[in-house]
Length: 265
Ligand SMILES: [Fe+2]
Image (cartoon, rainbow, N blue to C red; front, side):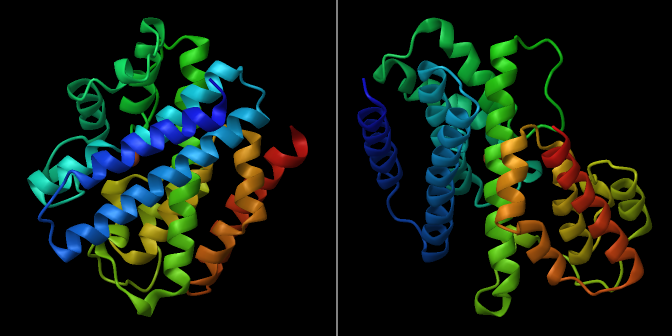
């Protein structure tokens, strides 16, 4: 099957899945649309990335599948628990795997048995702090790909959101934290040590933004860094932060790290 047909068939199924949820509140509808659009963009970017990385044609098709369905559990999560907060409900990645199994989606698209595990592992681990250690080379390839594609799209959405801020507050994007006036100590230590900022240290909106900037330490592929720099996502987030020595130092550190990957690999 050519890629275009594959994409169209998956999109059609996904759209009708989303439309099966009736009687949503206006807010739920808005959140549904946010997740649906995110899924389409992640799927597109996944396949672009897979192409650039010269994955086999089969792997490119799987990349689109994983990208489109990585968050499919979000819709049930929202309807059942009225939140996207995994801590207050379910792990949405595991939930996505469950939905795919319940709906028998892999069989509908004649996905071969040996690719089942590959898909479920990639989806189940897209939101984990780290990938499990015992993955095969092919599992690693796709599990890393969805993590990159997902993060890049979230950074895109956030950078747009922060820069057009007052239009429409959306607490699912920023959590309900006080604005804050400086970066917390624990947060600045982590990011300056070249580590991902842990959620537990985040206490203000400024910290949230720094945490999002620290995601560069968790990107896997050079092409992801290219997109990040070309689209200026990190810079845009930085531009919405108060400028002081610490914030400037953090931004430099993250930027230099990203540029080094591009120019030295
Ligand atoms: Fe997700």
